[in-house]
Amino acid sequence: MITSYFVWVSLKKIAFMNLFVSLQKIIRENWLEKSVKLQNPATIHTTLYYFWRYLSEEQISLAKDEIDKIRSELKDDKIILKDFRYFLHWEKAIFYIAPETDIDLQSFNRGFEELFHEESDKNKLAYIPHITIMRIKDISEYERFKTLFENEVRWFLRDFWKLDYLEDVNLYCVNSDYDPEMQISIY
Image 1 (cartoon, rainbow, N blue to C red):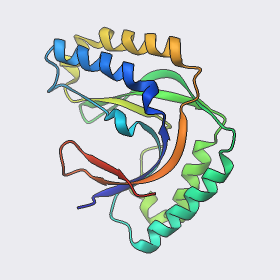
Image 2 (tube, rainbow, N blue to C red):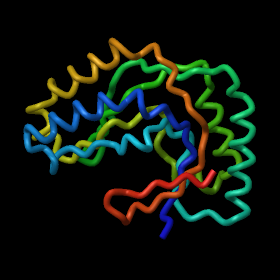
Image 3 (tube, rainbow, N blue to C red):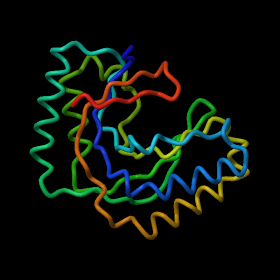
């Protein structure tokens, strides 16, 4: 069953492959599988808008029209990687990379808020463009190995930040009840 939808800027997966392999190695070597969960590298992205519920066919059509407008504006734009940061909330954290781009991601997010204003009431958190790398379920355990993760990402950013990571803009349906979470492109 679909539990939610995302509109996101999909990123070139091959560019992240070595980073995810290195991070997975840190997790396995330090028995951190219960404390840290990597983002699925097959769906690496920057979220533009998150829908908290099932969408009707009419709403999906509106979202697709908005995506088409965005795609037409992204002719020569690029996304590069800036630095890493954390979202901290509810005794958990998200480790993410901040993108740097001339693309007005904030404006695209506001476009969806205007179209789906009843939905934006649930999106109370301020929109911050980000590329989720991993979810930290046990912060105190993670702290012991934090330097290993951060150094690996620093190395990756130092060598690869200038690449253009932009792939496309897509609409995904999500089943968050399934583990691992299912994310499937529908447009």
